[in-house]
Image (cartoon, rainbow, N blue to C red; front, side, top):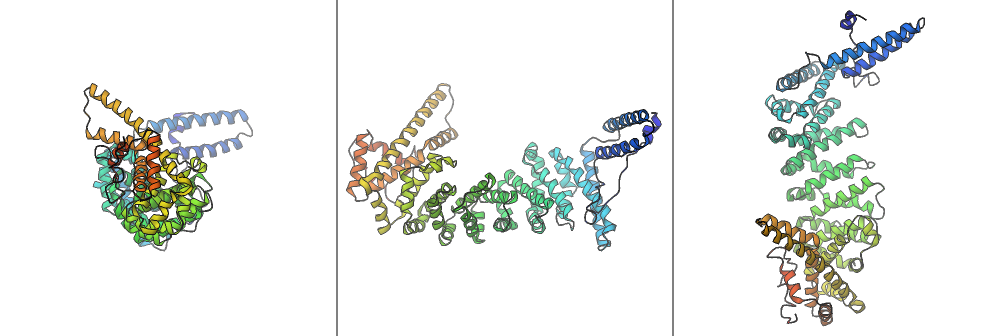
Length: 567
């Protein structure tokens, strides 16, 4: 095999095709190694035919051709014409993209009814978009995309008549905004994100998703990648959640979640994005309430009232929707919508049905009833016989709840918080019904309350002992205990059960001050019997050096026991 054959060798480029009209034909826009592979396949077939007369010559020819291909591939790797990926090559790539985009737009306008005239330019445009993925490996050059106005051009292609082109742009943006890549160059990432937001990229992405048919796999993948872009930007810059929600994203998410479609990955992703938008953001919570989103969430969750999720992914979606609902209930206006939408009734039924949704429904009730704004929900909960549901959960942590991933501490925290909220908010008859529950069966609920008190008191005291040891060690080493360290220590006390302990102590104070002497006597009796101290309860209620004190009641918290002289 001589050098002349090597120089004259050219792989077959194949025939072009229309993505819309010739879906069954082979894609001409493959990578160079794919072309070589297909050429090798065709050459091998030819060699087999020619070699019918002489098998040895055929084998030699095949070996020689393999050597040629290997040399060509090595030559391609070391090709001096192959430019390294640097600022110059990126500029050249962006310029090529702009030219092809303009040419395709021009041909579409000139020949709107003749796809054959502009289809070749459309394929060329798609090719350069695929090549631009290499820019995602160099976030420090993102400023070129902005300076050469290609970000604006890319966003314009999101509304391209051919959804294949729009999906290709979505794939590129998803890779460009990958959170790991963004963190590699904060300066480049800031420039890119600023440019995208200035062009209202979320509104354009939403408009594109609205026209995609998720029955088609490629378009369903386009929706998934679009949500990935939004998640990446929200993680890099959480402050954009309000703007994104107001640009139609919130409305689209609610519409997609309630759509009567089989459960899939896109619905799961929508529930995750919704929970992200609502996290620590009253603006998005208010917007969801105005769009009747509380009803949408309740309708979707009602499916799990009597049926458990069939897959792990569906269970994750259910938890995302519960988290979104809890976030919404942090806004007082949404508590009224939750009440009117019969959310309390649904959560109460879920607690009784003993399905996987029971753990999360308990958390929702806690969020809906806490604080002065939860007064109406507290009264309604008693009216729908919720006391019959909550107190069995108070008396014993269900085994199924433990196996559902919820910890015993989490369960007891929510139950005690709900009871404390009712004691804080209930008036007249409903309050009497609640207090009477503690007198039933020889005050067994007071016994359970005191059992929990000593359980969490011991856990917090052990945590305090460890923290004090660490403080002494830090002082010995000459380290400074600043506010950040004190906050960290306080969070560790909360993890040990401080909030649950404070809720329990508040319940003890309330029932002792209820006017029912038998309750107060039982509390003091058990305290004395187990070596407890009113001073300890008083200290817990007042918090830790001003931190963590709770204010369930309107009057001084320790009024029932402050005058007590017992040790």
